[in-house]
Length: 359
Ligand SMILES: *Cc1c(COP(=O)(O)O)cnc(C)c1O
Image (tube, rainbow, N blue to C red; front, top):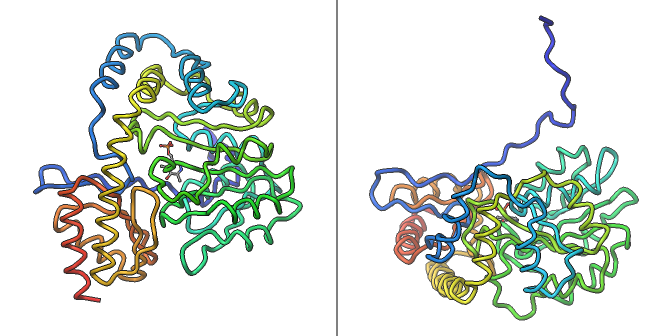
């Protein structure tokens, strides 16, 4: 046996590990998980039955082309089938997008702080990450991003609304930015929280992509649709990009359970979107209450709020945990708090009010 270990790609050194939101403590007093932007509602009855039925045949491989789901999506969003690609969550699709466009010597750009998967999938590809700081108001600095485009830029993520700040990019500024991006650079509009947007000035990425061949839109069933555990997301992009995604996707990555549950969810959309509406009401209540308590909270269009607590971040997270609420701390920066069921939000608000006295 040789002394040395197998040679691994040097790019993998120092890749940050994805930190999943902490689970709520088992067996504790009312313990709520507000750390992963999940939907707090249990699966809808019809969706659950569909998934159970699909489970009857998990000795078989799934439909590799996701035919039923692709047809449903094409119909629902009025896009050609050739413009669709599915994946194991939209993170899986995002990774395929980076893999399809970027490698060593190339640059992948995104705002920072933004979704923590971006640095990971960029580094795996071997491309260089170009992180452009958010503005003081926690919003994408699109002018600075356009200025940072170089000959080597291959892909730019625009997370709208941005995770973890909840802030949005509006129509006029996005169009102005896209006009500045060279047509051979792919812009990915990551719209994981699209269904929670109520600001009419925030563009629907699917309208933006239609006459811009270098724009792709990422959507997921994990958040509003409540299928986080089943791992299914999709991209809408023009043909060469969507075809590249279908080529680079892990074969059979999306299970039949996930495919069938996603179709059933699209068909149960009225009921699902009713739940989203309730969460949006809770979001307003939590946001207003925090502001009333004296906190500075960026306006959010997602299912979470952001508190820039700086060096008090970890203390705040610990204080929340004491009352049975698990939030998502980014040490030294701030805390992201998912909007949950009203009881969970009440506990959070009480903890926040107490914590303010220590600031
Ligand atoms: C949650 C999230 C996703 C989607 O994750 P899945 O892989 O679909 O579960 C994508 N982008 C952002 C910004 C997210 O917050």
